[in-house]
Structure formats: C-alpha cells, structure tokens
Length: 179
Image 1 (cartoon, one colour):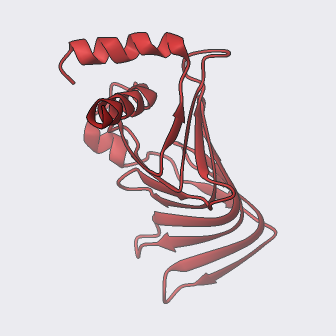
Image 2 (cartoon, rainbow, N blue to C red; image 1 turned 90 degrees about the horizontal axis):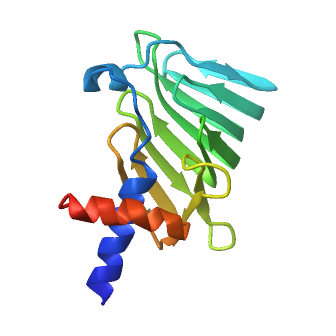
Image 3 (spheres, rainbow, N blue to C red; image 1 turned 60 degrees about the vertical axis):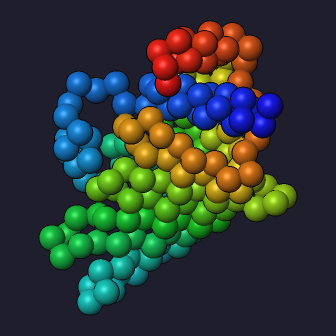
C-alpha cells in the first residue's frame, strides 16, 4: 500500500510539472537564458571581489523563467557579469504564467534551472499549479521542494499534495505509458 501511494505521489508530481517548458528549443537553450534578469530593491550593495550583490527591501527579480519577490536577496555574479545564483529570503513568492510558489527561502541556480524552495513547520513551502485551468489547480506543500525547470522533475520532503480528481486521468495516462 505504501509503495502504491509513493508511486501515485511520484506520478502526480511528474504531471504537475509536465507542462513546465513547452518550448521547442534544445536543452542547451533552456539552460542558457537569453535575456538578462532585472533586479530592483530599496537598497543594494555589490562586492566586486566576491561577486555577490545584496538587495534589501521589497526585492523584485524579473528573470525570463520566473519572477521573484522577497525581503532580501543575495545574487552571485560570475566574472563575465552573468547572474549565476539567487538566494532570496523572507516572504518569498516566485511566479510564472501558470505557477505560484511561496516559502521562507528560495535558491535559484539560473544556468541549470534548479530551484530549491524551503519553508517552516508553521508555513511550509508551497507550489500552486494552475496549468489545468480555473478551479483545477494542484497544490504541493513540503518542508523542502526542489524542482528542475524544463526537466519535469520535482522532489518534495514531507509532502502534502492536493490534486483535483479530474487530474487522475493524467495519472492513468502516465501509468499507461509505463512511467
């Protein structure tokens, strides 16, 4: 029974992120964003030697893959002046066209498209997927959620997943394909 629930959970999660990237571009193009990210905040500091920019107060990151709101953020910039990693802390909200994510902290590795979202016992990390339309959203909660943009993979610690019953058709379809 536990194995069946675990398999069902994995299938639900794979369906949750199945529509993440529908672009016809190659994997290399997905890993290399084509436009620069724009970051705004009330105050910022930059340590050129360390390659770390610190942003404080009403931080907003506009990346081509996601938008991030947070109380503060630390941004790692490589010597070629490209954004490598963002660590956003405090009242984090991360959005794109069909998904919203919330937590206490998010770490976003821009070149690889890896996102790690963490929460607390009283306020777990959460992703709301609205890709299936009005009233058919899926909600994933956990102490830590890791996902890979474009790879249709997600890992959730202490998982709590809510999916509409109409979403079971997607699970049955995935099971029929031998996933």
